[in-house]
Image 1 (cartoon, rainbow, N blue to C red):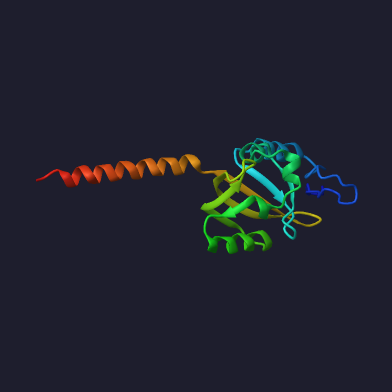
Image 2: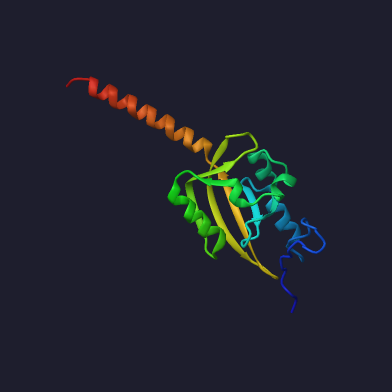
Length: 166
């Protein structure tokens, strides 16, 4: 029976942060899915929150180069919009559990003081020789803008309805 494909961690001894993550027949497919994903993807070390790999969407959304992102920790890149969400984010980084939040989190960008609102999914990839973390960050600016436009229309409609007499 053939051995299943297993993920490989970049070798700390060799300093090679960009070694192949999968071997076997799924290697090309996994790499393509990672690179072509429409969401920003951040592969990280759960114990240190050190970013190990990012996809091109993560680079575009944040404005940072791949090299800059690989020198960061996820904790310096993500921020909760309200205080109680920070503890949930910390728990998700460090514990084996799936975490999903449709809103309430911001992705830091290269531009000083500019953050992108994102929905987050944080999950664990249990691969040999150890567990990795994967953050999926989806840009929700368009949804927020649409919601604000809808609220504006709703307010105007209420104003019109209250001004019309029976």
